[in-house]
Structure formats: structure tokens, C-alpha cells
Image (tube, rainbow, N blue to C red; front, side):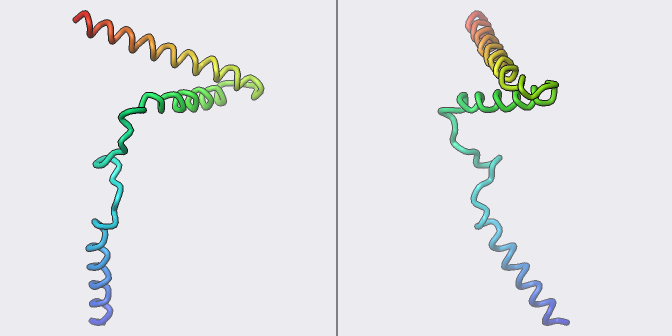
Length: 93
């Protein structure tokens, strides 16, 4: 029984000792460097949100591409207007 306990302890020691060195990517501590093009990542997110929303809300599947496109355009237009309004607000204040 002591040999089994020693084996388990040695395996646990190897695993706990190797864990911090094998963990290469920590998403919240070491985020990906996407500072230059993060605004472009909003477009796929807007398209995905509009397609999923219209898929849930639409009765006929043939309407989804047109309605999702209109919704995506509305979301992008509102985001641009909101950004412009906030920019003007910060410049005036």
C-alpha cells in the first residue's frame, strides 16, 4: 500500500510541477494583441447576432437573408450614430 501511495504522490508531484509551465495561453491575463483591428471584428458579430435573432423571430426561412441584412445595417448605422454623438459630446465638454 505504501508503494501505491508513493506512486500517486510522485505522479501528482510531476503533474502539479508541470502544470504552470505547460499552460501557454491565459486569455484574461495575456489577451491576444488585436488592438489595431478590433473594430473590424464587430462586423461578424453584428451579422451573427442579426442572423440568429431573425432566425428565431421569422416565420419563413426564405425571409431570413433580407431581414438579417436590414437588421445588420440598422445595428451598424446605430453604432456609428452613437459613436458620433459620443464623440461630439466629448468634444463639447
